[in-house]
Figure 1 (cartoon, rainbow, N blue to C red):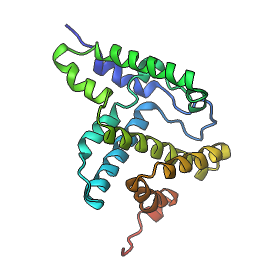
Figure 2: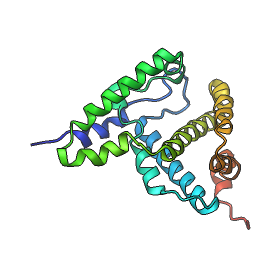
Figure 3: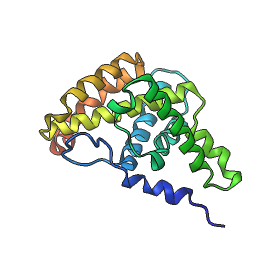
Figure 4: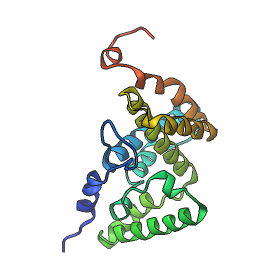
Length: 196
């Protein structure tokens, strides 16, 4: 028997993000998920190694890799639509849950529990880290678009930064202070060797 799970996951690269915005460069769900996983891992390392709070960076990264997997079936719904009102948000969450179940059904029975944990993360701390990483990834996208001269992302950048600061997560504040400024540098500036 042939299972379709990984073939479907590979289709994440065909789902465009930011569909209502004029983009200087396109971003797809697969690229976004990779960046969210990298940032979630980083936030978890900050939490564990800088703040001294127990955390599993690998679990955060793996969960982040699959955080938008249901969009294989739903597509990427723009944020202003998804959060327009509580009824739409609740309905969309139900659609996401059905899509996750459908995706899980494309795995052998023995593999479903492992992937269900990733698609339906039950640990509140891991969920918060992935949500923060998702917002940080969106913020980075906004900053990159602004850097390329696209004013289309000005409001989104301000709103996303405000939401990030409103999360009151020390690891997010640390990331904003110590890592976000580098996204404003040119490649030559990134490659400069400076004493820290």
